[in-house]
Image (tube, rainbow, N blue to C red):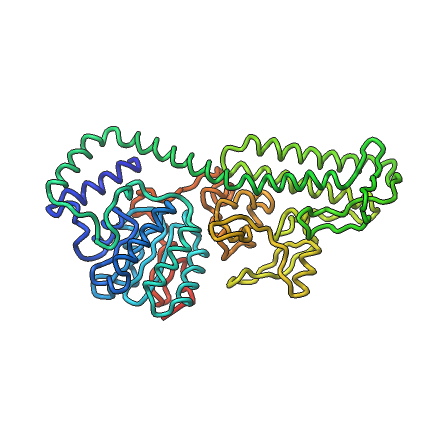
Length: 479
């Protein structure tokens, strides 16, 4: 059965009854699920003191502007809902792949299909909002939603277009509207699967174009910086000499500046290599030039965010070749092939691993250049690569999932998840942008699909502070 067919069946079932489109006005999980199929936010009338209509409308606008599959329910703590199973039941009844945020009485919890938002990201966000807003479920659900729309992969269900008013339990309308709706759905059912399939492809293409354009300035900066490094080293492959740059110091400063290998100038102006060393230096330089050309060619041909991964990989290879060339010219030990500096790949290959933790996160070992290692040892902040966000410049690991393929090209699918656990970018791993994380094809579920009740049970646990939680343990927030 196609995605649209399943959605049409569900919609027919909710509109065909005596209550028509107001089927969501009943009690229990089924009613909440019916409301959420119509729109991203449902507030039970008995819980409007937690999230008043104006706040519910603002929350719905937040989700709709972001076009993300984030579903919010604000419910009373009474016998209609079993807090130990509520989230699992709600996901099964709604049938939408997405992120679910639920305030139940004075408690809050959330869960997500892992392809939309990772379990670690959900756990960290829930813990953060519980700590920030103890005893205020309305603030918790609002704060979590703001975080989720920044981290979630995918797009909102098409069924939400023109949906009902937030907080009113669904659309308004009478039996006549239901009959008309049913008739139209029957007439369109035969062609619907094709139309939605085409619409999904167009939406995906639109998202990919937007993601690529967001990445383009960052990648272009990387390519330009590497080209400048090639020029600064002053190597002449014809004579295997390293030429002095006017004002050059001749002191290596590998890593720590935006240019990474800036400072690889030679001041002696004499041949510093010969024989086999000269041949090896020429090979290093040729590899660096090839990597530079490869990066430019790949970026010119890029059509989706996943294509950027190859650009970053080429630049990482080129910077290692350039670092090796610099070592040959200086007569120092050749560098070990290591991952680029985590804080800014333009700093070049890392020289060691150091312990570091993002704000509010857990400590982990990250590869760093010599300059950033010295900064951290001295209690200073590292020279982080910042990118533009709606909130202003932020380190790339706090800027959202579109940067996943860019980072994956530098660090690879095996290393990156551990480096980014608990960050916004970490929540993208396994999602649609992170080509090579989880889904080797780079595909994955974009979220928002009507996928029925077949969710991974480990993604939805429940508990609301009772030791349940998503992914098999509580979040440490507790009530």
